[in-house]
Image (tube, rainbow, N blue to C red; front, top):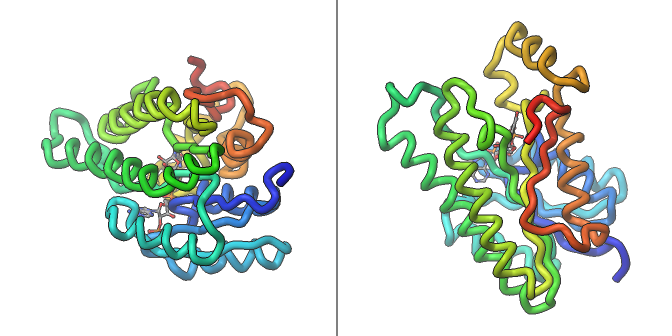
Length: 251
Ligand SMILES: NC(=O)c1ccc[n+]([C@@H]2O[C@H](COP(=O)([O-])OP(=O)(O)OC[C@H]3O[C@@H](n4cnc5c(N)ncnc54)[C@H](OP(=O)(O)O)[C@@H]3O)[C@@H](O)[C@H]2O)c1
């Protein structure tokens, strides 16, 4: 097998935003793509139809990534059709509250931490056996710049994603000897996502003004970084984070 042709990639939360853009890009690179979703079946089928119309291969599979049994049954469905998963892009965005710590309950903060890590744990556990057996795998998690640079009201997401980054580093250390790389892509604010819709135009213009490259990211910008980590070209980067933020935050 050369390049990425024929590899099977699972993109969690691929019915929308960054996940949908990533699914499309990986398909153009010759991967067979699993478009996971939770509620937006129609949108997921549209992503699949777009990939197929462009000559690629994709399938939509519903599963709540926080539920280990649902994740296992998704992986089983993929295994029956295409075999084991070579590339995991864990991108699904579970809900979280935006509010100051002062007004936050433990259920809100602890709930997000639990959802974030439970989902990462479940999807990683489920894809690992096939990757370990073949001695090759690519795991990419979607983090956020908010893990490094706090922003008002974002303590639940920023803290949960910071835990995800350290989880990724531990996995990179453990799985390197098995030929599996583990990396995190950390976007700044991304247009055309549900999160972008939360903020008004004035807020957006302030963010653009603070970005040396003069605009916010598009989902496709983030997908490019993910696709690099997912490819054979990434032979020697593991345990790293890639900031896709136009220079808004440099760390
Ligand atoms: N947007 C930004 O500005 C930004 C910035 C930094 C980092 N990120 C990170 O990038 C990733 C993608 O963000 P996005 O803004 O593109 O997301 P989005 O547009 O809100 O889409 C979220 C996706 O996650 C899926 N999803 C939610 N809960 C799920 C669950 N329990 N099981 C399976 N799928 C689930 C949704 O599926 P359904 O619609 O089918 O429910 C949807 O496909 C996230 O990890 C996010 O933290 C985003």
